[in-house]
Structures are given as structure tokens and as C-alpha cells.
Amino acid sequence: MAKRIDVSGLTAYYGSHKAIEDISMTVEPRSVTAFIGPSGCGKSTFLRTLNRMHEVTPGGRVEGKVLLDDEDLYGAGIDPVSVRREVGMVFQRPNPFPTMSIFDNVAAGLRLNGNYKKSELSDVVEKSLKGANLWNEVKDRLNKPGSGLSGGQQQRLCIARAIAVEPKVLLMDEPCSALDPISTLAIEDLIGELKERFTIVIVTHNMQQAARVSDRTAFFNLAAVGQPGRLIEIDDTERIFSNPSVQATEDYISGRFG
Amino acid sequence: MDISTYTTDAPPPTPRPTETERKRAARGATRPGDRIFLGLSRGSGILLLVIMAAIAVFLSYRASLAIGKDHGNFLTTFEWNTGLQPPVFGIAILAFGTIVSSIIAMALAVPVAVAIALFITHYAPRRMAGPVAYVIDLLAAVPSIVYGLWGALVLVPHMNGLFGWLNDYLGWTGIFSWDEGAPRSMLTVGILLAIMILPIITNVSREVFRQVPQMHEEAALALGATRWEVIRMAVIPFGRSGVISASMLGLGRALGETIAVATVLSPAFDIQASLLNPGGGTFAQNIASKFSEATPFGRDALIASGLVLFVITLLVNGAARVIIARRAEYSGANA
Image (cartoon, rainbow over all chains, first blue to last red; front, side):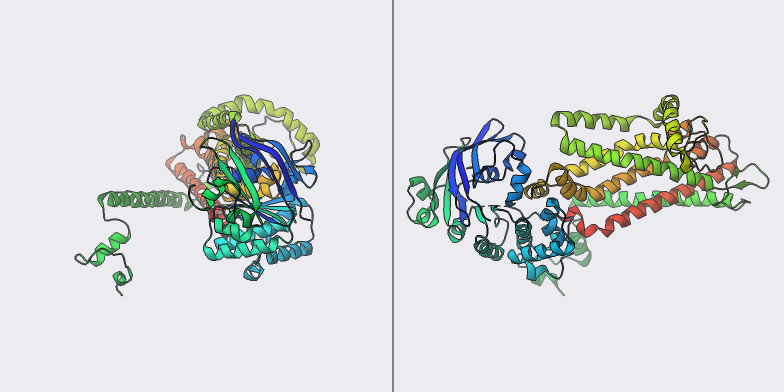
């Protein structure tokens, strides 16, 4: 079910500005890969090229290849809408639909994909909320608005919404940066459980978090402001945090810059 | 209980504030700027209530003078003969015509306005959105009388084709039957009103749709929603209460529109089942047509009809508020 991501020679632009340049990496299925690096180095931009959300931004375009198993996401005739049904995403700020109930939020993706019976929807909603460790907290108020939940609960609701459609890959863009430490811990535990089923890529500014949750870590950097961001190195998380092969990585991790 | 014991970062105890001073501080009215602004905003609020009350009192008083002498039933009588001895007049025709023409206007204008607003905010390339929005704004700036003249000189002659077609295919319903009279009818009025209220509904809806947070649209996109599905999942539900408010503004204008209706409609005090045959009337149109030649008693009678329009408008606004309030916890404002 989870798929491998194989990126080669990927460059992304905002209009004429080159945001990231020539990035290549492989992400194994059922693993957690963390992207770290200073602000503006293109981690989030790169993440958004993996489900073709980058091109939603006016002027956004991409060169290069992203293979999901053997299918090029940027190949001719590939519909970005169907890409996003395979590659789910969780955002920095929890963004449940304010006009929908908790139930409808989780069911939203399924309803896009086709007609389901009410009982089928209920099953998937329950399974997804359990998968997001939220079921026990909301099972008695599924018909209440999602906006009434706490920030951490809202973020887990968004994760439930994303996994309800059974994506092959789950992208997370700083999913804990708006949350308190306890909610953050809940999400980190959840990531550990979800990697049994999904390929997970997470952008984080919190290096302890990267060290705690990820199997592999990629360090991004940019030569100077205005220069495109580049992938400096990607390696096993343990190795990146103990003995990175590039000096810049060590400098960043040890807090000597950035 | 003394509140100051609970505040840890309170300033060193200067002379203790008196009760009034503390209340004033709680309202944020201790500095001159705050006090002036508080006075202005409170004054404006009170002024608004006073004006509303004054209108209501004026309308009710003058209306009661007329209604007391009415020998028909004021609410159900079809005729408007204030000159008879004893006078017989009622608002049945006017209420019917006002409501029917407004319903036609809303049915035509709201879907188009929402579609234009969505087009400007979510579909049109930026180079096109500006000019389209500008033209819509211009429509709002055209005076009523110009709409009326245009309606009478351009719209009415061009309605023959549409009316003939409606009569051929839908004439059997009765609502769309046509005796081939001049098309100065409720449907023509409704179409004209629709054009007149289109800009206000479009503009307000556009503002609401523009304020849909990017993150909600991205949430839908990331689930694999197409552009239309994004609009259906995130944009329209978010803007729903705003669109209702916008429609109420439009409806208010349609209910009260005077001179354009008076210019286009060929009024008569009878109820037409058909929307295509001339006849009927609206409150505002009737007041405008009769006021200048009315006796003092006739004027009071017209004011009585104005009171009914006032009440209808209040009821419609109240209904809209109820609709919005019922879904308040799901409103986009909770985002």
C-alpha cells in the first residue's frame, strides 16, 4: 500500500525565482523521513512538489521527475487531482473545515471519491479517527463542528481526514509547530504508528523532533538569501545527528548557525 | 471581593480607584481618545435606534389615522379608493405584487451574482477579474430612474419574444400565459429588479469569497478536490452566511424600489395569476404614483401601506438572522 518516492533532478520556481535546485532523493515505503534546514531553504516547497501542491501557487512550476513507485507524478497526462488523492498532506496550522462536523471532515475526502453508503462512511470515519488516536475523545460528538476541538485535536482530526482516503504517502508540513508540547507528543506517537501503513515525509524546525520520529533525515540549505535551496545530504537519522558527512550539516545541528 | 489581590503584575498601589473609576477603566474609557471614541460610537448606536423608533412612530401614527376610517379590510381589500365616501382601500394587491416581483428578482439575481462572485474570485485570471469587478461596481452606480427609463424604452419592447415563447411552452401553467398585451408586467419588473440588485449581491459575495482562508482551500486541494469541489467544500460553505446577508441587502432594495418599477409597470388593482399580463402593483410604486395627487387623507392611507412594507422588511431581515444564527457554530468565523 505504501509507496516509494524517487525524486531526480527536481527544480522548482516561483515565477522567475528558483526556489530549490536539482534535488534528488529516495524515500523508502513505510519509513519516516524528516526534512530539516534553516527557514527559506525550500523544505516546504520541496514537500509541496511531492503532491503537486506547489503549482497551486501562482507562478509555481517544477522541472524534474518524481516517481511514485514507477509512475512519474509530473508525467504527461497525469492529473494533479489524482496525484493528491494518492499523496495526502497535513499542514502547519490545523485546518479542519469550519463549516463541517467532525464526521463530515473525516468523510470529506471519501465523498470526493465516490458514493459510499452511510454505514461504509461510518466505518471509515471510526477507523480513521482511531488511527489518528482521536476516537475516544470525539466519539460522542461526531456531529459537532470540528472547530470546537483544541488545536492538537484539530491537527489529529486533519490527520484522520488525510488517512481516511488511504493515501500511499503522507506529507506533513511542520505539523506540530502550532501545538503545545503535550499535543506535539501525541502527534509524534501517532507518526510512529502511522509509518506501519504509510510512507511519511515530515518537515520540521525542531531537530529533537526529527531525531525522535524519523528514520532518515535530509538537510537542506541555501548558499545565500535569494539563492535556491539545495539538498545538502540525506542519511540515516542516527548518522546525521552523530556523524554527518558534510560540515554544514554538523554546524547546523550543533547550532553554530541557522 | 477585591480583584487586585489576584493580579500579580499590578502597578504599585497608588490611591485606590473608586468604584466608578474602576468601571470606567474596565470599559477602556480612561484616556481622552478612548472617551471620545466611546462617546461617538455609543452616540451613533443610540442615534440609529432613535431614528428607527421615530420612523416607526411616524408611520404608525399616520397609518392609524387612515386605517381607522377604512371601510374595507385594510389587509385583504383589493381596491385603493381613498376618495370614496366612505373610503375603501387595502394592501392585498400591493403586498402580492411586491412579494412576487421581489421573489422573481431574487430567483434570477442570486444565482447569477454568486456565480459572478465566484468567477471573479476563483476562476478569472487576475487581469480580467479587476475590470469585471469594476463594471459590476458601475452597475451599482446607475441611478434608479435610468434603470426605469432603460426598462421602459429597451427592456419592455424586447420582452415580446420571451413572453411569446413562455406562453407557447409554459402558458398551460397559467403563470406564464399571455394575452399579448404590452409586457409591462410583474415578470418584466422582476427582471429589471434582478439587474438592479445584481451588483450589491455580487459585491458583498465577492468580498466574502475572497476572505476564505487559503488554508481551507488547500485542505480541500490536498484531499484531491478539483477546483469546483474546492469551491463546493470550502468556499461556498464558508461564504454561506455572507451570501445570505448580501441577498437580504438586495432583497431590501427590490422590496423598496420605487421609480424604476413605476416607470415600467402598468399598474392595475387586480390580481393576475399570470406574471406576463400587465397589472398589479407594489407598495413603493403605488406610493410614488399616487402621492403627489393625493388628499391629506389619501396620503395617510399611502403611509399606512408604507408601514406594511416596513414591517415586511423587518420580518425578512429577522428571518435571515434566524437562518444565519442557526448555523452559527459551523460558521467560517470559527476558523
